Length: 371
Ligand SMILES: Cc1cc2nc3c(=O)[nH]c(=O)nc-3n(C[C@H](O)[C@H](O)[C@H](O)COP(=O)(O)OP(=O)(O)OC[C@H]3O[C@@H](n4cnc5c(N)ncnc54)[C@H](O)[C@@H]3O)c2cc1C
Image 1 (cartoon, protein in one colour):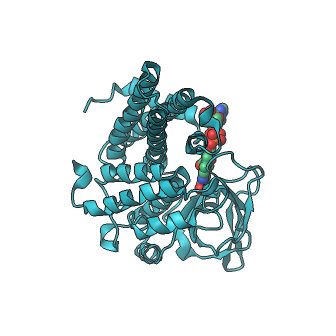
Image 2 (cartoon, rainbow, N blue to C red):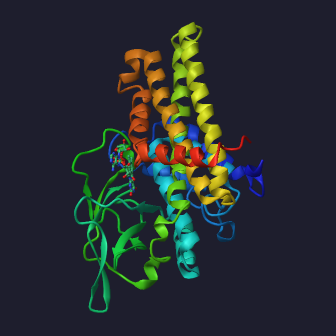
């Protein structure tokens, strides 16, 4: 039970206590509107500070070793509360992890103080096909030119960690942003995950400086962290599946259909899928957060875990929709939004390549050791 070592269980309980009221109040909108009330509740419950190192007033989730089990619970709970909320906070965890891992003491202190003051961090790394973000020299000054796309929390995250090209290297920079600043919508809106307010941000003209540059060249791409972070978005996604199965159970019961053998078979299959995903994530999360295994083994295990969760979720959505029929497609039914959010959120980079590489690793090195 490494999950509970040294951690105040009530911190997680506080987040758990927020999830149900959030769900009941429907505080995660199905439109491109930042879930401000929900985020305030989570902030009060300690969700923003949880990823800070313990010495900085947090729980070390994502920033300290041996916290994989608790981080899994935390992200799964956020996914239950609402996938867009989970996406926003998963990015916050990822950004803080990078600063703690690669940033200097001043940068870590700056970030910790900002987060204790309520800052939400974003991590924006996806360049548009043209006009990707780069750092240019203008006299003695460093000035940003270009944009990022698929920026979750655009206009609402107070700080972003971004990748930018600088002298043919990929560098990470901390950027502070005012509300709504420099944001434009994507060229076409996403059908799900609308409340993650994913837009484009144009940074052209923002002056930056060497003390905002985190780590050294290509740190962002350094393995195993670059690939292994996928276990955390999978943990949020799996929380979305759990919410869907909970809604299915309630709705079948309310309609007097819970004893039907076909419904039970589908429900059982979906539960098996969820638990399979959870077991994969337990293993992958432990390996990624402990950092004691071989780098390539961590990346391959996280890769298979990601694909296992993706499959469990896609199958789960199909089973839930088959079980509820047209009711699952009525916009008044929360199932409709959660399924759509989940199907959107599952689109993560290069799924085929991840499976190919992970399978290749175990093909060459032997099967994972049962644990
Ligand atoms: C809700 C949401 C929020 C997001 N928020 C952020 C954010 O805050 N910051 C950020 O940086 N990004 C964000 N992203 C973007 C994300 O990081 C990925 O860029 C995006 O999800 C990629 O998805 P994709 O399915 O288009 O991936 P792709 O990698 O394009 O995959 C699509 C398909 O093409 C295949 N494929 C990929 N490469 C090749 C190839 N070379 N040849 C042949 N086939 C190929 C894949 O296997 C897959 O089948 C967000 C995405 C979502 C959905």
